[in-house]
Length: 291
Image (cartoon, rainbow, N blue to C red; front, side, top):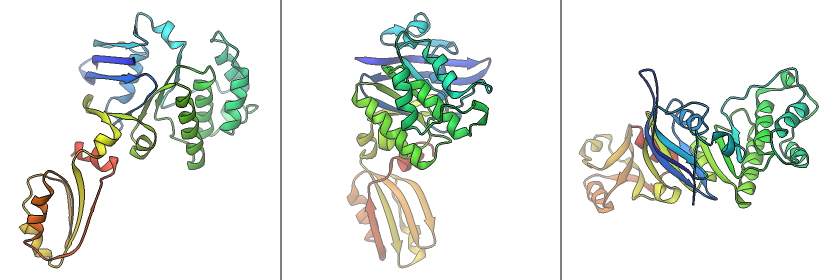
């Protein structure tokens, strides 16, 4: 079953492109990474499927229900953390969270206190006394307190220190083990690599690839780090399948997709001082898509 299905979703702001023909699905029980740099269209996609803004064309469903027609109904089972959080400054954190909990048809108080303890959040402070990172913690607790079936997280770790980020990752993995589906938007590739089962890459408002993490990393790419005896030998390299090439003095680094024997044949033409061949990181593959 697909919890989220997006088909040819397009959003224009006047003549300004937001997203165009975005299509992908998020399967029940998975953590789906939605990656791209700032401005690629991640937040626009998320706000559209949450019916916070309306699409120009295309469609999106959550729990097999149209996101616009049944928006109020599906939101009851969604926990949403936006990339930027804003609150009434004069309220205490405890009052804000109790107010949020009042929108759900269940008792959220026990879970609220559990989450506050995990995230080391002082419930008695006023919101305007909180740092940006602590306001983000409020958003995390707010998004999880009603134990939603679907979590939509837009750049969730910005403002959190490394220790708190790890607590957050552990929390999300624990929720996922309970069956919660997660859509995780980020431009930080190490986060996605650590958490997600599948990844969708968005570039300039359009999807360019959707695949599982292992397929993305192991898609016949190899990372070569070559150090030559003579800097002049670099000009002898002629590999049509070389990508993300970096040359510095007598060293050349590149990603290669193809028959590795072609590289060996090229290396045979020169004197090699040192050679390292390794699997590229997700970030290196991702940047190749943006070259």
